[in-house]
Amino acid sequence: WKLGFALTVVASQAAGAFFSTGAKYAKVNCSLPQVGGGKMAGGAANMYRLGWTLVSPWHWSVDTVMIASLTFVIVIYGKQLLSSALGRELLPGLEVVLATIAVTIISSALNYEGSIVGLPPAVPTDRAQTADVASLLLDAAAGWVWKWPWDLPFDAVVDRLSGWAPATATVFAFAAVDFLAIISVEDAAPPAGGWSPTREMFGQGLASVASGVAGSGPVGGSLSRSLVASLVGASSPLTGLVCGIATLCLARPEVAALLAPVPKALLAAIVLAAVLPGVVRPKDVLKLRGGDSVVAWITALASVATDPTAGFAVGIVAFGLVWTLTGRRNKQE
Image (cartoon, rainbow, N blue to C red; front, side, top):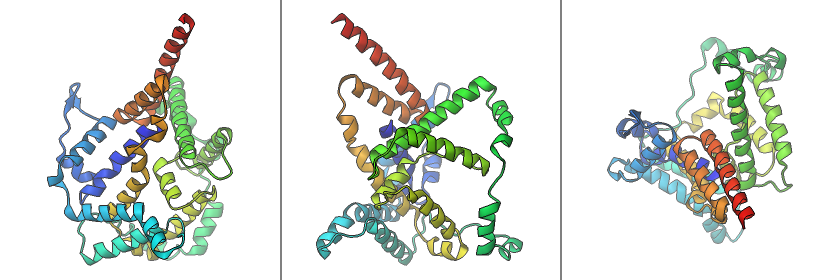
């Protein structure tokens, strides 16, 4: 499943590394084939666009490919080259920071016309006058509660999902896939002190309740963001808290203006540098043999062709069938 999820990340980021306007260009210029009376959709459409992107170099933006390639090379090989040149070990993640600064300066000097991060939406004048740090901190401390757990609109959710039975099935599938994403992240980059699936499940549930109270969406794990965090040397559970606080600081107009010229191709290349090595050579999947290997590849392909939630369900069914067939054969022997 982790391999299939990683492939979907690659498919979502590849366009940003080849086209000046990213995924928008691929959606406009790549004509999807007809499947079952309608256009191809879901994961299959994303993989089709990925294939079209890779075999259509005449559509590529030269500037965008150069920016993405330079970023990718610096992130992958920068730490090793700089450590050898300086004769000392560099701080984790320094190559990512250097790549971001260097490539942004180069793209600005060359007047890069592709997609960039840009400035955040302007704050209304009446809010801008009162949106100082003190008021923001006060709002964060006392005004974050949207509804208490017992006041959450469960009935509205059930009605939207067409009843308790489909709602329960949907929620269970979403929570299971979300939990699978979290333990996949832990397995890909285990913390120094070890980890516990039970503790992760409890944390996921508690965080999702708190998120609902704040009026936000369910909390889950992100393989791409976690691999990027691992790439820069983050290993503590405080990573999420630090990233959240840093994001709030970066959202300030004064700071956001400094990030405005960062090319989106650069960001796509950083994600690809973190995810792509595990896709090119999926060591954990290649170690599997027999029925386990069959289940792993079926799950990966189903996740890519549909979506990670459906891939998870297909993987469970495939495991059940393989386990049943294997058990019968063992009894016959």
